[in-house]
Length: 328
Image (tube, rainbow, N blue to C red; front, side):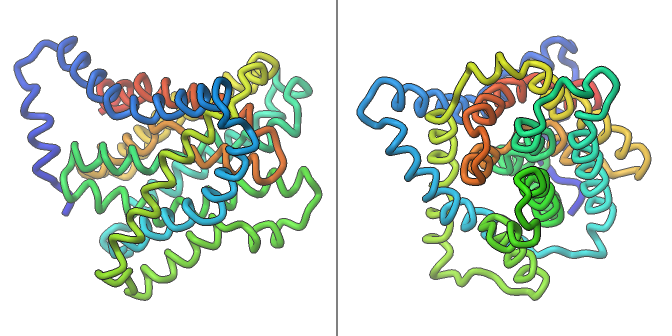
């Protein structure tokens, strides 16, 4: 399970090449993987600004993605591959430790020396999730390419154990800042409901029936393009300029600190090669498009978070090159 032929082929195919040529090849590959996401964000931005598909249309798309499409995608991603808790214990521990480190750093930002009093609490509450949530679609694609079927199983383990933690951590600061009941916000949140039901079904050995799987897959798959286009439509670039310090801090955690934490965990837990590669991929991902949807639906500055999602998608090329080309 842990040593996929895809990983060996990916490494072997570059042996004997100059180092700079290997780096260039990886960067082109990462750019190809990230370009569809970035282009869909740009399409949403242009459609909203220059066509009759204005903001009133995209608000309805937000609701569709948040209450139906994204929950189906999360449920399907978690139940797709059975979790073996014993065999995957090292990977689960690494994912949870990495996730808690990212969450801790994001929450600590307003209290750090030099940042205290300079970060708007409401902006931080809505945007903190950008520092630790990840684009699971790209993670699945890249893990399969580098580590084959073993990579898909390993990233499924990380999705299964980390998505519930990340969703709870994303909701908590917004519910706390808005002074609404945290438990009530969790119970009403469709993303958390979907991940909890999916994890329960996975551990109980349940799966989507074969005859229903194509429909579920298409429903979940449609959430990615619509969510990214909605993020582009809701983007407010002026918000990025007004919150430069928060922007730099969150993206530094997402694209620099997380890969370094992952590298430390690889060494500390002595992960096998395929596990190490998948954990590094996981740590260097662009943030999730659903950050925008969640922020907007909970009444926070979705336009600012949409801008962060866009920047994070572009920075993903650099962080993936750093994690897999330097740290690995």
